Image (cartoon, rainbow, N blue to C red):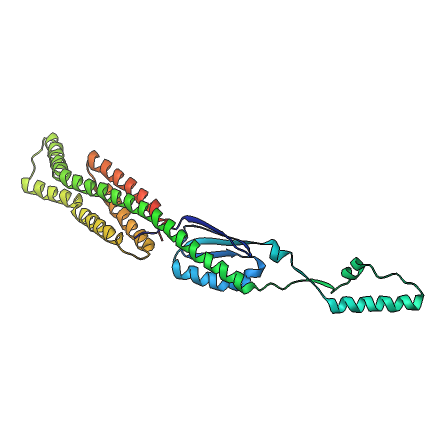
Length: 288
């Protein structure tokens, strides 16, 4: 089953602690390149996130980001250092006795003193677990998206294989006719010179021409490549690099076929073949 390297997924969940939003997108790349953006409080799980993604993916430039918005219950919790506040009040009263004043210290003035008011420490462990749980859902959806895109690419490649197979069959059918035209053309040129010629020598030259224009080997290799490609499409593993190498072999045979063509029909078919191969190559670039 083919998997595309181009995909996007987004998952969001709202809990008592707050809202989590994971996003992941990727494009094609020769290797696996993972880029993460995590809030400061979730830096501790970066290694776990990378490990999970590395186990599931083999190629692609992947960007994953997490956004967390804490709920009011957590974000608004504050604590008062009552011991320090009481010490400040006692100190203020002692000063009042010394100065003969009786004004009580304003509460807000006490709260402004450094260390009196603090924010409750948040236990990030449960939050990080929730983030990792949502990441699992994100990866499943992301892989499903890649799989669907891969299925579309596989169908396109199968269609192109069928078209290439038709071209190979058509070229095989045209070869005897092309060789016969070359034979008549060569004989016509010799006869136009109005000189005596050696028939055995002429037949020998015709054999040389036939050997030079022979493309049976190229057609056989194209047929073998088609069989290999169809087999690769059935594998349940990353096959992008193998397909990339195989399409290069397709292109090599197509170039040779074009250079050996001796008639306009074969030349036209060779061009059609190269167009189909290029279409395959463009799609294979996105396969993992």
